[in-house]
Image 1 (tube, rainbow, N blue to C red):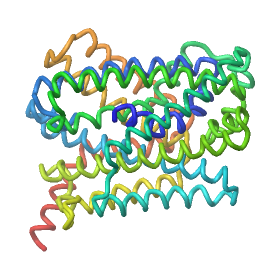
Image 2 (image 1 turned 180 degrees about the vertical axis):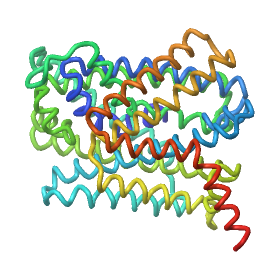
Image 3 (image 1 turned 45 degrees about the horizontal axis):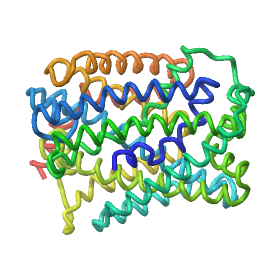
Image 4 (image 1 turned 120 degrees about the vertical axis):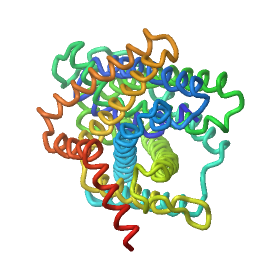
Length: 410
C-alpha cells in the first residue's frame, strides 16, 4: 500500500520535469529526494509510536497543544493533496490522449472526467480492496522495472545528457526539490495507524522499506528511460515520456502496456488521495479548523462535501495548469510539511535526532531552493501559493470566525 501510494502516478508525472532540470543527473535527484523522504518517513513513524496515534502532521501538532499552527499546516497539506491529484489527473489525460490522438482538448477533458468518476465512486463508498491495490502495485512495478531493464541493457551513457545542458550536482539537488511530490504517498499509511496490527512494529517496516524500494525503482527508471530514448526526447515529451520509451522498446504493444499502467497508476492514486484527503478535511473541520460546512457526511457515511469540493478543485487545476507548475507547487507543499514533521520529531526526541534533524534541515533548505526557482521560472505560481499560505497562516482565523457566525445566524 505504501509503495502504491508513492509510485501511483509519481514517476509517470515527474520524470520529464526532473530530466529537464538535472539532465544526466536526474537519477541522483530521485536518490537525493528519497533520502529526505526516508528521514520524513522515519519521523512520521517515530511520532506515531511516540504518541501511539496516527493521523499525520495535524494530529502530531495537536498533541503539543499547537492547535493554531496545526490548523494552518493542515490547510497547506490539503492544498498539496489537491495539487497532487491535479498532477495525476493531468498525467492520466496526457497518456490517454497520446494513444487516442483526438487533439489537444482531449487530455484536459479526460483529466476532468477521471476526477469526476472517482468523486462519484467515493460518494457511493466504493473503494479499492486491498487485493486490487496489491495487484495494481505489482503490475506497475513489473512494467516499470521491465522497461527500465530493457533500457539499461542498451547501456549508452551519452544518452543521459543528449540534448540537455551540462548540469552538475547543484542542478540535481534542485531537481530533487522540484519532484519531491513523487514520494509523498507513504504518509497516508499513518492515517490508518489504529487499523494496523502491531503498528509500532509493522508501520516502520512498511514505510521505510517501501521508500527504499521506490528509490531504487525511480533511479533505474530514470537511467533506463533516458538510455532508451535519450534525455532530449524525455524532455520534449515530458508529459508522456514513458509511453515514448515503451513504444521504442516494444512497439505498439509497449505503448499500450505503458499507457495502461499509467492509467491504472494515476487513477488508483486519484482515488486513494481523494479518499484520504476528504477524511482529513472532515476531521480538521470537526476540530473547527476548516469551515463547518465540510463537517458533513452522506447516508453512506462519506464526507460528501469534502469529496466534491476537493475533487472539483483538482479538476480545475488539471484543466488549466501545466505539468511543471503543478509538480513543483505540490512538491513545495509537501517539503514544507515534512520539514515541520521532522522538526517536531527532533524537538520531541522521537527517534534518532541525527536523522530527524537532517530531515528538518534538508526539507527546509529544499523548500527555500524551490521557492527561489519558482521566483525565477514561474512567479505567478509562487504568488498563488504565497496567497494560499498567507490565508492559511493569517486569514484562517478570520475566515473561520466569519463562517461560524454566518452559520449561527442562518
